[in-house]
Amino acid sequence: MLPIEVRDVSLEYDTPAGRVQGVKGASFGMQASEFLCIVGPSGCGKSTLLNIIAGFLTPTSGEIRIGGKAVNGHGMDRGVVFQDFAQLFPWRTALGNVTFGLEMKGVPKAEREEIARKQLALVKLEKFMDAYPHHLSGGMQQRVAIARALAYDPAVLLMDEPFAALDAMTRDDMQRLLADVWHKTRKTVIYVTHNVAEAVYLADRVIVMTPHPGQVKAEIPIDLPRPRDPLSVEFLDTQKRLLSHLGGTAIPAAA
Amino acid sequence: MTTQDVVTSSSAAGLPARHTPAGDVWWRALTRNLYPFVVVAALWELVARLGLFPARLFPSLEVVFAAFWRLTVSGILPHHAAETVFRLLAGFGIAAVVGVLIGIAMGRSRRAEDIFLPLVSIGAPIPGLAYAPLFLLWFGLGNFSAILLVGFVSAFPIIFNAWTGVKAVKEIWVRSAQAMGADQRKLFRYVILPGALPYILTGLRLGLAQAWRVLVAVEMLAAVPWGLGWMIFGAREFLNTDVMLSGIAVIAVIGLALEKLVFQRIETYTVVRWGMVTA
Image 1 (spheres, one colour):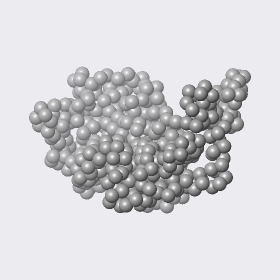
Image 2 (cartoon, each protein chain N blue to C red; image 1 turned 180 degrees about the vertical axis):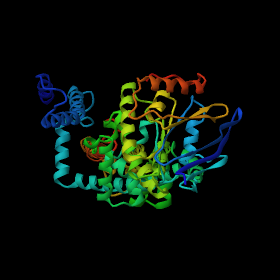
Image 3 (cartoon, each protein chain N blue to C red; image 1 turned 30 degrees about the horizontal axis):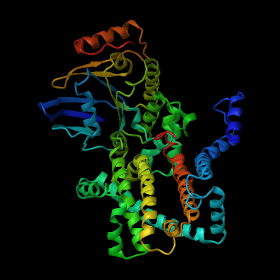
Image 4 (cartoon, each protein chain N blue to C red; image 1 turned 180 degrees about the horizontal axis):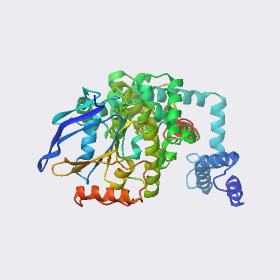
């Protein structure tokens, strides 16, 4: 039984210019603890697909199965990290944000704070437990968001370009940290990005999407040994191979 | 003025700006609060001494203070003030509870919005005092009418701002909370309410200002036996400008106290601490 299966998912929506096919016939399955990247240019429907998997959008046809069960709407079997730093609740401290999901689950206070502290330590923010989000940098806020999504132990972690709004140096640090967190937690992760180097650095497998209509064009396994060196010849070759699948439509990102 | 000099000279003496001693902050707050009173008093005294008006109509500060003191020790002024504050808090309290509830309902439910928004939009621009004669006819002279009118009039800005606040709650907060398993009730309590708080507080502030305006005026009309508005209005009959000014001064002090001791404190502990509003 695969932890997550996407079966022939399509989404159409109406615009003033007529009916638009946002996602067309997307299908893929995932192994447990797999890190999957969905890559494509803006407007290819990759974020839409992630939002369907997260349950924020209902597909026009097709279904999402998690742990063998078809899912409808959002649920605690999935953790979500968005691109927007504003996703944290400004009225809660870093710790309060991370405990939120556990609080909704009804976990007692002492226990949920214990878990949250561990999650914050995992993203190296244990010193900033009591800080409110507006006192944290963008990178730190995204780390809190990752800890928050992991805290209630969902089966799948969904990430929608979480580092796209960060500066290049912080982004590199965050990618290393995420690779490390994934190595320690062995979560099943679906990670949306338009950054090819990021996908090659993080993924076990990359799904390439193309726009108009948004559909899966290729699936490329990345079997480089970890930890990966973004300056190695193999890394750059893989990056080139991935770019060729994108047909030059993606913005080539610096490693 | 000397207090301000002390503040500036101590910060100019090479103290780092971030490291302000607690005493310094205290002085600065005090001078800032006293400043409007000092300026108004100085201008007042100047005009009084120039003799532009007859002394009976424009008494010097000394006369005003004498009247203030006389009315305070005799217990008359505190009694007036207490009655006014009671009506203010009763009326404003009703408006705060009802207004926030209606506003949030409007922000959350399309149906509530369709029902209330047209009514609120029509009612809000009408000056509160215009309703006063109606309320007095319907509910009679006295406290009940006055409190009801204060509540009715001050509810409008509270409703509007609570409604706007709920609408301004970021979609991403709602999505995050839903992804983490928040049901409708928890979403409301843990996300919508704190998310809308900056607007709700603004609405309460505006509502309180409305409440003051209409209360002082309606006290002049509602034939209540006590109240600052009534005292000011009554004093006119006898050209007691000193009594009128004492009443105005008390209104200013109560208003400032509510602003500084209640609203600013709530803000400092909530929306300012959370970075949702800059101090």
